[in-house]
Length: 142
Image 1 (cartoon, rainbow, N blue to C red):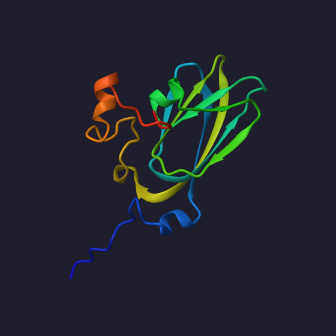
Image 2 (tube, rainbow, N blue to C red):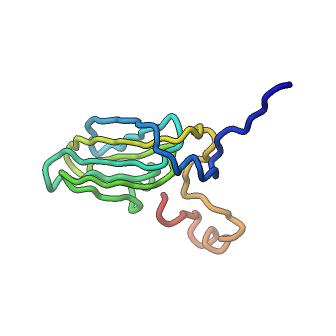
């Protein structure tokens, strides 16, 4: 008799209710965006800007988001916690080089079980917008 036990899934609420597995990353970023690819889906992310006040770190969830307007600016010496389930985090310095720290709380859900976040949405629902602008972007993501 084989054991075909269910695996942790993306919509399994219990996976987000327990304490996460810590995943720490730190470094320096310039105006060229970088991506942090987490090995598992997150339940929360804490980001700190270790640089002096007035030096802004841009935080986003897609490359377009961090480069355009769907980003979260984090001034120097500030910390923010996002309770989000993502598999990637994008960072970029607004101008000068920025030192950052990231603490991700990981679930046991494999990153392959989550689709990548994108600015694309159902084209049949928004056919008029697609015809008018040539593209569709989901507000807030990328």
